[in-house]
Amino acid sequence: TVAQRNGGHELVQIQSEEQGVAVAADVEVVLGDFKKAVCEAAPNLKWMQTFAAGLDGGIIYEGLADREGVLISNMAGEYAAAAADHAWALYLALVRKLHRDMPQQWRKEWAAEHDQGDVVGGTLGVIGCGGFGVEMAKRALGYDMRVVAVDSVRMEKPDCVSELKSASKKNLHSLLERSDVVMVATPITPDTYRMLGAEELARMKPTAYLINVARGGIIDEEALAAALKESRLAGAGLDVCEIEPLPADSPLWNAPNFILTPHVAGWAASRPQKMFEFFCANLERYLTGQTPLHIADPKRGF
Image 1 (cartoon, rainbow, N blue to C red):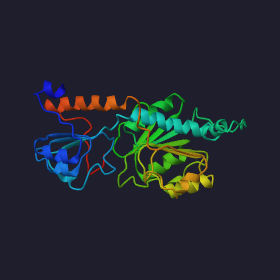
Image 2: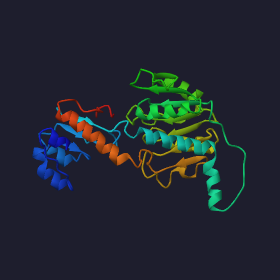
Image 3: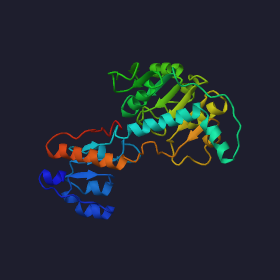
Image 4: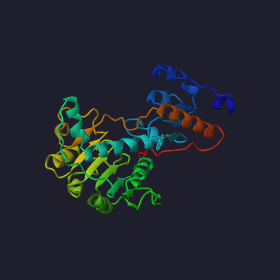
């Protein structure tokens, strides 16, 4: 209806790459996967909208970033609420020892240990203050937590954040040293790849927790496994890994106080509806001569 309301444009649902190539000559907008063969066969292409929150994971193939006159937008921030809920679920499960106590239920055992931690009044460190990071910070306010954040782009501090600084190594280290829980909310780029290595993990409190629902590859997983096994961290929760699925020989599988979920943090029952509502609104903008929202820079990676 959006297309019909703005000039009667034709919408074509592509079922295969071959079908896409066959109709590509007349294609102006692509929604979904950026198939190389389809895009290269589309000389009139003007705008591409992905369902993903970022531009990593092979979404952008070599050469597409240099194609002039083509806008690329993602769904940045549209899944932030669900991802933040998941990050907090991982943290609360770890600090309240649910990962240890729940298997007792399955074994019909009852063995209470009184060593649960505190959440209220602590400090949350957020790495990346975009959509994911802001939603994580909002939830911390309900626990009377102080929120400190670093970001490579955003300089204006949101109300839910106590302190926002640039993502320099010095500022990152300061955040790690002060935080009771660190949540990763930054895209994966050459600058953020393994930005949390052995040196950074060593700066965290031994009572602190590390949570990542953003992208794999930001944390050095071998260094994380070592820190957990040597009790240099209280616990960690990951929804994303550098290689997915996590390889069978990864030391994380047997790391103590560790919870792994299979890259599901951004999912919610409302996600399909949100995706298409966002695209329809963005398509309306495009067809009425406005710039679509969430235009990304493929060279920068987000």
